[in-house]
Image (tube, rainbow, N blue to C red; front, side, top):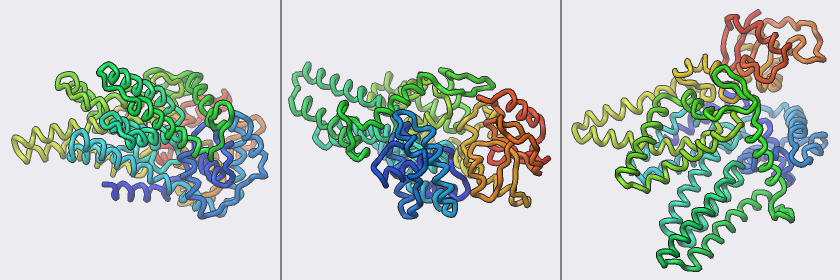
Length: 528
């Protein structure tokens, strides 16, 4: 399964263009390796960007330190303008290597989903046995949201791995409170901190658990200085060491933390409180909806994954309360609590922010499937095999039929992938990846110019296609029509989020026209 999953990811790389965040994270990570200066892209921790930078290291692309963006990015908590300028200058200066940069900059991140599947197998095997472990890996590997985000230089898959490793390490520490367990827990906590800022919540969680544990042992008269004082110090000491190591040991006094880590945490807190313009079920909001992520999960996951997830959660709750199998809380609580945490956020821009929940619902879902298969096998081996096929075969069929358009997948509850944009927007439907397939579509028809607007459209030129703006799209535009044969509009823009009245009027001209094609379920192509 791991080999098949890796083969699918490797075949995705040359087919899909850059996710819009890739274009920022790749040069940022490369600059970290060159300079040990973390000013670029402060809104995300460095782990995944450093990994991507290692892929670029063998290419030795030129970095535009002379760009005004390099100085701009040094401004505390304001990396946007600087990063945009750096990104543009970086790819323009290395235009001849664009395809190689896109490939090698994303190649190293493939190790993250492979490690995630291995961790899911290990964790499930410890709780439910080898059959359930294989089923959990299968459910996760055939889920389009996992496969699609696995080739992206973004921290969502990495944060899923970090959270799962934290839970695995916590379980080991609480059952075997030795020095190794403390080091593993501290290592997992440190890894989480350099993966995603929202995982900072694990610090008070770990502290609370250790305090409760010490209090319980004190009541039971099993308190010891080594176990309740020294080992917690090792946990937080190891986490702190990993954190500052990933920032090249650059700390400021006070608070003895890397400055860009502090800036980034502040930015994320601000984003989650204030939100950004978002789209859900035909409505636009600047602050989002508390139910956004449950709805996104219901519409973006496959029906088999959705059914096994809900069924697995219900089954696990029953097992905990009726069967007194409290060990299942390790699989049940993290996913449920993470969902609850996301529901408090006003940043509703994609189901990918919910990915850390996916491994845990895959684990409980697999346990349920394994239990059903085992129950069927007791009656008849044929019945057991049939039960497994009915529950799992659709997942494989969807994974194969959906390839390569995983990120834009929607299940039938949303009307399918071609209509999903009517229910959700942003990174759920358009990420910039489909710019490359769009260029191939146009060139196959003898065209190297197109009028339109789409996420990642600035990269069309690297694929040999010139993008012309709609007349009047920008205030300073030339009002003359470029008269191209084709018009291309990204699905995100049909949601008309954060557009001016003039821009909405331009989009509305095409709203009821029949497109010639919909590239990757993401970009509408109209022939004039």
